[in-house]
Length: 147
Ligand SMILES: Nc1ncnc2c1ncn2[C@@H]1O[C@H](COP(=O)(O)OP(=O)(O)OP(=O)(O)O)[C@@H](O)[C@H]1O
Ligand SMILES: [Mg+2]
Image 1 (tube, rainbow, N blue to C red):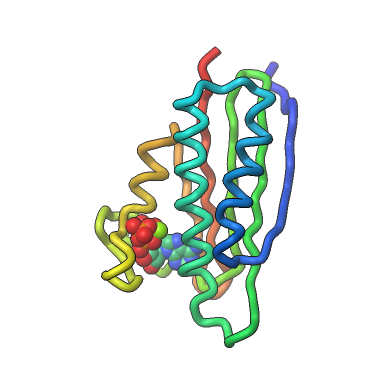
Image 2: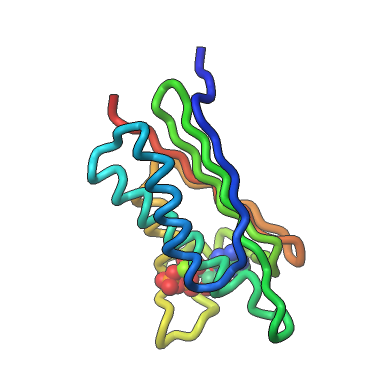
């Protein structure tokens, strides 16, 4: 029977220095599962993209001085599946399918290239994105670590 062997939840302000905090926290959580260097690198990359999206896009219309939060929820299962859920209570995405198309971006074209979701999809085993305009976005990534 599949059971949860470890879990963790954190909430951080959606500011740029917390991108590395999230990456390091996820690494520390995974270390106990003895992942390969490649698996760890893949998850770190996917986490970076999801967290960066919360920082850059989710709270773009908040008044100056106000910060939103990033919610990270991690789970490790007995069959070596790892789930990483990264969510926000920001502006949401009107058309998720369109947002997930490679090279689609609503950001500043000189800084963003619309590849974040593609990276999350490529470096994990399953990606689910749920979003509601005005309510926020939830990105769930699953990865099956080698035995
Ligand atoms: N958490 C979020 N809240 C609101 N909108 C989002 C969120 N995440 C993604 N989006 C929307 O989806 C689009 C595509 O996201 P994606 O990460 O693929 O590309 P990008 O962030 O624009 O560029 P890149 O990730 O390459 O820097 C974004 O431009 C934005 O419009
Ligand atoms: Mg992005």
